[in-house]
Amino acid sequence: MCSTIMQEEIKLNNGTKMPILGLGTWKSIPGEVEKAVQTAVAIGYRHIDCAMVYENENEIGNALQKIMTSDVKREDLYIVSKLWNSHHRPDLVEIGLRESLKHLGLDYLDLYLIHSPMAFQENSGLNPVDDKGKLIYSSIDYVETWKAMEACVRSGLTRSIGVSNFNSYQLQRILDTCTIKPVTNQVECHPYLNQQKLIDYCAKRQVLVTAYSPLGSPDRPWAKSGDRSLLQDPVVLEIAKTHNKSAAQVLIRYQIQRGVAVIPKSVSKARIEENFNVFDFKLSEEEMTNLNSLNCNVRYLHHDWVADHPYFPFAIEF
Image 1: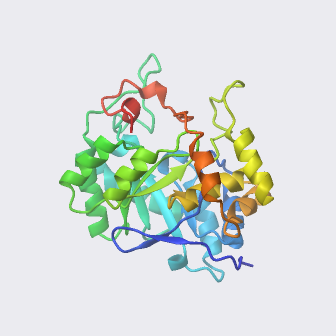
Image 2: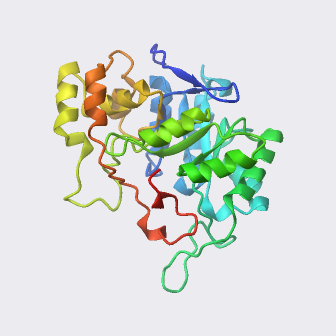
Image 3: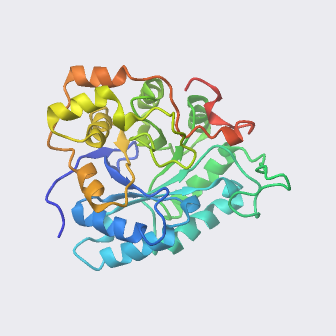
């Protein structure tokens, strides 16, 4: 039984539409993610965010095959995947995309992203390391990778293409040379890292921002006990109390009102449902201002272990 809640869609620069709210699947482990995707679609989600490197696309594919035998058709769904760093070499891009399609059991993707501007050594697994455990990089320029992404649109393997974790300079390099524009830049985004400058930069170039880790990624593997918790922030909690909503619902609603697509992750039925019930209230202008004032450039997914990569994206302001 599907939800009757109608969620909003955003029109992208190529004329296609993307549901503004999706289900994230990073860290959704096998044994849990299949049920989570089925639950999400039954609740009303249509946008599912996947990636090669999450190593769970097979199980998501199992869920999609079961879903598409019901009232939900392939064209009702919006499926996203991402090209991992080990497949940036142009001849590997289509191979990576076809691998995701095979796992997901699909003929095409709605959106395919370059997961990061940073290339890793090819043909050595997803995260190749040397004898000291250090990741081995590749010198492939993401501009060359992008040309192969464009070929995937022309061949019908994906309807749209975009980027993830690109800073403004890196995005501009793509825009200056592309024949098909990125429709989105998927980045970490929440009130502690509100990305307003990057959002404004992207908006002027008709590129949508999609927010990952909108709740502050509380289950990130490297979390420390002293880290600031967005879900426990007094400002967020006070706004949640005013609307009789959860902190998570406030943080998701915050992005929707900014015109930012948002992909919270959960495998819990109760939380998946809670995260979807954000279309029946609205934050006031003052509340939005108060949430924006929390910005302190706290990046939970800092990727410090690849900070020496030539294309490390977080070395400039935005």
